[in-house]
Length: 115
Image 1 (cartoon, rainbow, N blue to C red):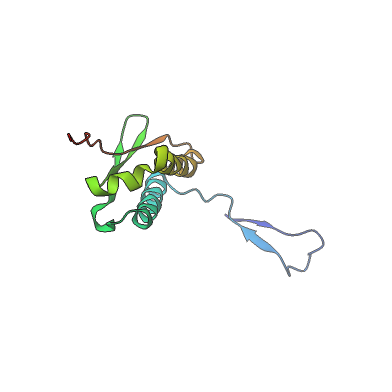
Image 2 (cartoon, helix red, strand yellow):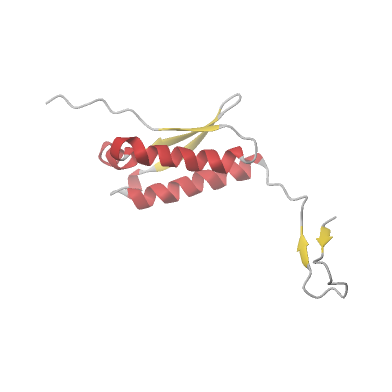
């Protein structure tokens, strides 16, 4: 049953707002929303957006967001001194920790090319 919260002095019902305090999205909805938002952000960052995807791996206590990308997009995802990936990790942490879910972001490793 939704709880009706009224502003003080509004006994006639005008100007009242209804707030559903019992609504809590389930874990899978939160993780899918976070995955989609991360993917949308990555699509704007990289040069070749068709080569980027984000997958979800469920661990025992932690959820891992795995970024799959090509070598030519890797530098854009990392950013200067790792600032871009740090920002993505902060965003994912903020979106999931609010609901009590632990999460990390993983990027692929590409070995340095021999010159």
